[in-house]
Length: 322
Image (cartoon, rainbow, N blue to C red; front, side, top):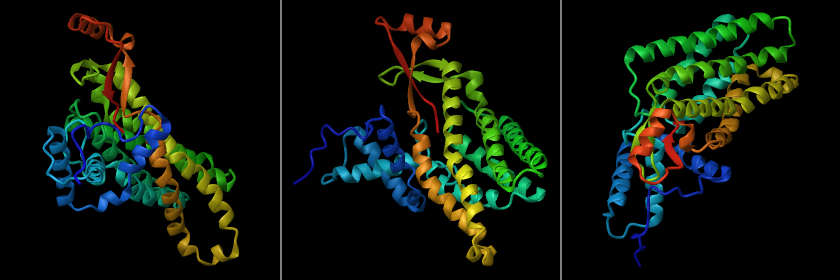
């Protein structure tokens, strides 16, 4: 017996996006690191299935679970604004494998200056690619702007890490282990706004409830980027704050002291354990499709909305990015 798909809306969230738990379930689904290993042909199949479902032309015999799986792959690999396939490293589903390696090595090699500089540079290069990939794509960014943003963010992270390393040389060992997190938090406050500065300059696309574009808002961009900064810092915080405490205690055990070569792999593994939960939790702090009261928009945009719509429009929607 075939499933009735006449009322199926593939763009409707599977879980309630107005609740934190619903958003966490949604992001657990699309940030699943296993999707990184899915072959290109299967991703292309997922896009075709999603597009056919939108047009109501899915092949006979298609089951609802197949469409849910196609939507999972589509959301994990294709940009919500453009529908273009994102680069693998920049996808949020790559946050766990990519982040665990970088975080583990940042926490392990924090004592020598060359190691600090190298791993902060690697981390900010990774973050810059993720920030660019998950931006609101309605605001184009030039190559020059990306280069300036990348250099500024990387310099901030390295300078913060180096400066704090020098200040904490005489501090307890545990304080030194927290330097990488301080550098990451400071750099996120620079990296994300800089990589997405075009949104702050020109504004991001805001739409009505029917997804019709109304205009561009710089205030909406500022709110979206602020929420992303908070999410990224939250994503890194538990692992980079609690893991040094855990490693401080583990390294006092004789068995751990005998196998120092395993310290770095152990930190990488433990970082992954934190990230596999924190990536969806941090992404779920705020809805990806945000609503903003019209009264908060720029006065000129409010006038445009009043002139265009006969009835009052209480809210506008926009994609804040991830």
